Length: 162
Image 1 (cartoon, rainbow, N blue to C red):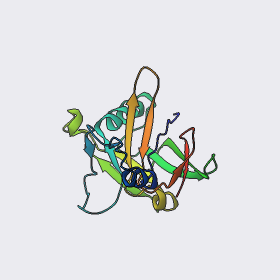
Image 2: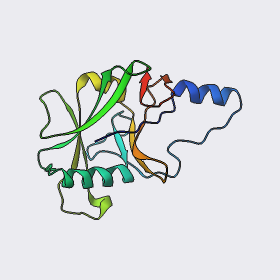
Image 3: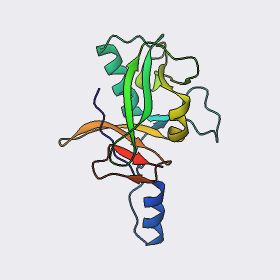
Image 4: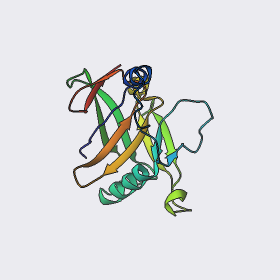
């Protein structure tokens, strides 16, 4: 699954605010969902309603069962700014993964198993507090990583540094 990434770093947001430049909140107008066992104030991974729907549809298309499998979100070294996002389906969680379960009830599926997102411990350092969104426009479509931990992103938007 190809991923489109667009970032607004915390440093860019702070700099714009200090200069009096108001930039649109990247979460404005989005329905952001927390995992089922989310503790308020705890930084984890969140998804938007659009992203959850897209993940569910892609899992069905790829024959990935929500009972065992899920979407693996991670970080790898490389890219213009040093780190790149990667996403793929995985058949099961690994031993040390953090597993985030998102109810399908906002999608009208009351009795369906939750959609799971797996994050390895190394990637979690860079991804905690992130919101995964999905954008679909005439010009482009793909997942957006709204990550407060990134301090610099590249021009292509697919890599970052923290």
